[in-house]
Length: 433
Image (cartoon, rainbow, N blue to C red; front, side, top):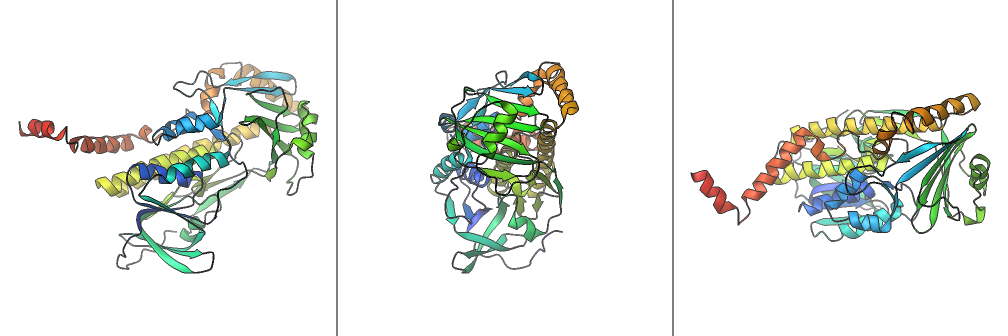
């Protein structure tokens, strides 16, 4: 149901764009808008950056996006490139998914814990004079008219005030308060699979490769982390809200043969993947971005990177609307179309990968091994597996992949070139002739 459009007279804006949520997607959007000189107010409920590692995979398209703000080299310097993922089945080693053949300057998936990514984004965000970050506040109401969005916010002491902007972008995660306030229709699907993950001091001999173990009893996934650490993810038969100490180590040894000491474990968390799709990704002047717009299985690392691509598109779109007078309705319609197509594809791929890896029983395990060995990893599909998992073949993985967006970007570039002091006299001569 669309939010009610108010007829209030426009108030003095606090920014051109208000971003709700200073997670990785919200901060990237703030940086991309700040790079373009857009006045941004970023609102965040948490007082500090998180200290716990969450998402870790940074794909090549995301690194290309980060290059626009000069952060790609910093991410790579702090991260660890994963170039190969070795897959083990019920009958032994079944093949390797390699990223080495991916075109471009980043033929790998970068392993970088989310708290490091967020720290690097926060440091970059602070360099933009047009961007302000306000922590310790929560949005409690949203209303909008034809000129602006008005947000009512509450601080830690309970004091209520308002903030106004031409547009607002909800980057407030899978439990999005903004999505609830707008009463946007969603569809949710719970997959019925359960996992525990934990980061360990890495004393294995697995090196810089990722390793997947698909067994008759359940899956184990293992990814190297920078700083001599390794993440282990184990499938469980039921949800484990408070996993007992040593459970990950026990399951890893039973299914993979790898020995990881419980004393080397640094943290752990349990999760049960689910999917959520929004019927629309904007309501008037309020735009959804990242997990506020779509939730997908974290197995495969598709979610955060899809959110980063949302942020790139939203930044170009808002810059075009606000600073170049481009058609807002046309831009928003294209954002909704292309970003829903991208997120639907990514979510479906994440579900397919998780589904194949979680088959149980001897019969299904033998079938999976045959598919992986003779079709997917060493058969006719082997050439496309690396780009597939690295999100190189996701539709609209960059804003320029949209023909509409590419045309609008070209118009912005042409206008900027026309206004350059060294180019303007030449253009004026050409136009007069």
